[in-house]
Amino acid sequence: MNEPGILIVEDEIIVALDIRNSLERIGYRNVRIASDGAQALELVEERPPDLILMDILLKEAGTDAADGISIATKVRERRDIPIIYITAYADETTLQRAKITQPYGYILKPFEERDLRTTIEMALYKHRMEDELRRSEERYRRFFEEDLTGDFIADGAGTIVTCNPAFARIFGFPSTDEAMGTGLSALFPSAAEWDGFIGAVRNNRMLVYHERELRRADGSPVFIVTNTTGLFEGGTLVEIRGYIFDETYRKRLEQQFLQAQKMEAVGRLAGGVAHDFNNLLTVINGYSEFILSQSPAENPFLREVREINRAGERAAHLTRQLLAFSSKQVLQPRVVDLNTIVTNIESMLRRLIGEHIELKSNLAEDLWKIEVDPGQLEQVIMNLAVNARDAMSGGGELLIETANCTVPFDLPAISPEMRQGDYIKLTVSDTGHGFDDETRSYIFEPFFTTKPPGEGTGLGLPTVYGIIAQSCGHIDVRSEPGNGSVFTIFLPRAEKPEQARTDRTAPGEARHGTETVLVVEDEDVVRSLISHILKLYGYTVLEARNGADALLVHKRHRESIDIAIIDLVMPGLSGNVLADRLHQATPGLKVLFISGYTDRTIHDLIADEKSAAFLQKPFKPDELAERLRQVLEG
Image 1: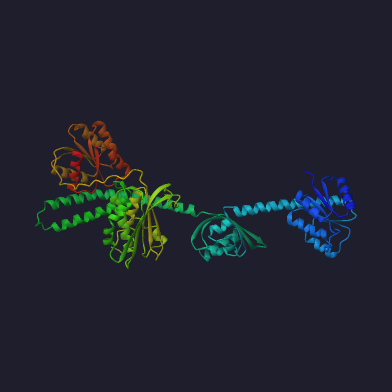
Image 2: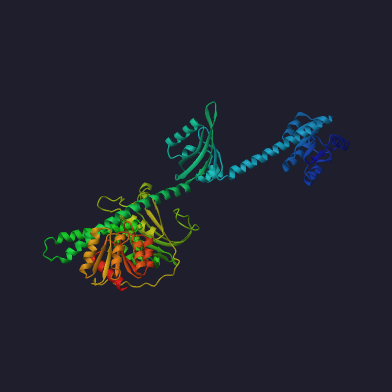
């Protein structure tokens, strides 16, 4: 250790020199002398000593007879230096005044060198300990205040005695002062939950990784994990200490992930149902179309067949919505301007929502382009508009907005799958009756509806969800009972330039043909229907019930087969695998895929394969014949 520096403040120079000699004899050689208060203050500023030996009474003190105390007071105001008073005599008033300066000891003249050394060593040791304690307290204070976890101490009744800024931030208090004095019970959703918590602290004395939902100062929910300890005196809870982790973001991600898993499972179920149902509808609608086309006007059952056909068409529309929800439909995306889509359907929306609802739009200038299926996106907007209309039976306002945004700079991601990057934001908001959080958790599930029986299928919002998901977008919903609803859709910015639009040509009348067609379909009734249609249009038909059977038929008739109609979903060899095997044997063989559903990967396969096309089930006889001719002549 370095030798401590000592400053002697003594106006009697002989006494001062005598004290210095004593200090040197007992081992203190770094000693300076000040003969008055002014000189003492100068030496303190020049090189602060480790300890001051201060004469409690200095001569030439003017009106202040206890000038040593005054100098000590000034020193203590400027520096943290331990002071020991040296005095031959001091009255009680002077001693009481000296106590204010918190001296580290007194030495009475004359003194023994042993007593001088003991007093100095005790003062230096005490000062070191106090300094260490102050640094320790400062480290703890800084750790407490800068800790990212919410730290708190409350009394036995639960009133917050102290807390750090993180605690105030977690629970939405403007400052720690606002938080202190608040009862912990106010942060619990109910008195029963607070009673359960405090009872657990009393019974267990410590709660480790205790997870629960609490309330912020404004009443909004916050999910926390806390480690809490109760301090007891004589069996009575006197203090509660704890630290809190804010798990709200993680909890929301977890809930979103679970919701995504649930929607994926429901989507797989919906897609499977739609696939099987579409096979049945292909037969129902196909044969009813035949009957209608072949029946004379005086047929007594003509009206009944028409009703069967209409019911089949409505059922086909429902299955298309299920496929949209389950992301199992084939989209035809292209680069478009969202503002143009909104503008083009505004007149239709006005007729759709009625005159009692005011339609407004706020479309951003210089909006980035998106790559979507325009028809499907129009369906999204119309479904949201219909949903808003039904929520505003007494009138209201429907607002459609567009804007550019960047994640995560402009706003936080709304789902775990939402990647960083540029998005176009489409917002559809209404002033309707809104709905609560429980309803919100179900609105995208098929067949869930809040409308009376017979007034809604429960497929409007699931269709929106499916189209947006299949378009690599995301959807967020905000609503409160009585405060309307806001649906916000985020679609990725297109990387390609906008394409020039080409007008679609209306399909012509179905044409006949004489080519040989290989029909591969595992459903007997569907295969039979397709064969029947094609034979009526003049084609030669070869049938196969699965992939293995198709390879055998193809081997026997390889030279004569012009095109293969293949169901994508079959047991054994799937449709695309079968097509690859056929192409290996007969390069350039044209293929028309059919299916009750498909996904984006199959769509990409079809797009890459120039000799392949796709037709969605259920289809009408003339649609099949027309599509077949397009592929053959393409």
